[in-house]
Length: 299
Ligand SMILES: NC(=O)c1ccc[n+]([C@@H]2O[C@H](COP(=O)([O-])OP(=O)(O)OC[C@H]3O[C@@H](n4cnc5c(N)ncnc54)[C@H](OP(=O)(O)O)[C@@H]3O)[C@@H](O)[C@H]2O)c1
View 1 (spheres, rainbow, N blue to C red):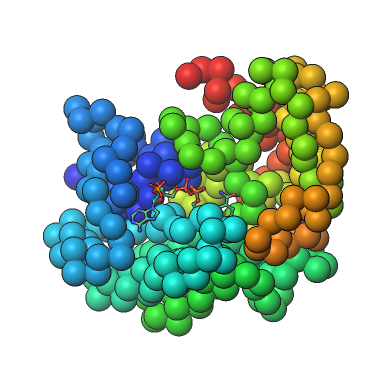
View 2 (tube, protein in one colour):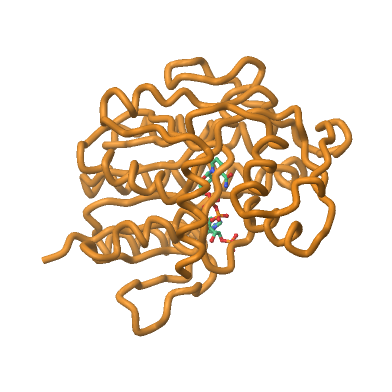
């Protein structure tokens, strides 16, 4: 009998990658706002539900009674969160708190996806033990969510990715997809050269999550790639990997964008813990982009 896995945000970038990772040997059900991308004849059951509806969520989770819950859904519009602070806090803080309480009640593990935005981005890269200091509504709401699940008493694994990219169907926001499309269309693009991190490849993050869950690895974990680079350098690597014209990529500074919300400028996540304690190989961005290209080519 296959184990039951419940994934919130199952239609999103990480949700889809988790389905790829688990669908062979787990019974997967998911929660999302929209019916989504999985054919009705597939084994993937998606329940259309707003996670803010605590009564419905409670009923649904008690009924499914999964063996584990992976919570990827979030309010992810960093700039809009400045105008919709309460909405961001409801989704990113109150919802994970509720889910952790339900996991505690069912005595099942919860994997919660957080972010490098819990740090202020003044002097990254950061280790799991570094003090958090979020700036802006999205960052503060995600930090509140992370704290709530860690304080809940449930068996919790918190994973922090940064600048996640990956392959999927009908993804709302994927930096790589967007850039590839623009460069293929011969359109010039402006990319900031003063924001640094070590981007996280969603396909490999899904493998790491699976390993963490198999090991009952409670606590906080960072996962990204080997080198911390600027977004501009990342864009150049993407162009190189996909054989696209890098001369269309112009470097600009964050100040030029006039974004509402602050960004962690010198961010990045130290991944020594996952390497040391789980034996996970941390790959270079070039290696992971090559894997992504393979994944996209086989589609
Ligand atoms: N993407 C990144 O660069 C990045 C970096 C660091 C951390 N993270 C974290 O990683 C996690 C996964 O990110 P992702 O990029 O996979 O996100 P995503 O592609 O936006 O997927 C999230 C999914 O959750 C759904 N959702 C949002 N609010 C919901 C609600 N109230 N009820 C039910 N479903 C809801 C979304 O539906 P709609 O699309 O209809 O809103 C979407 O299908 C998030 O927790 C995010 O904070 C992401």
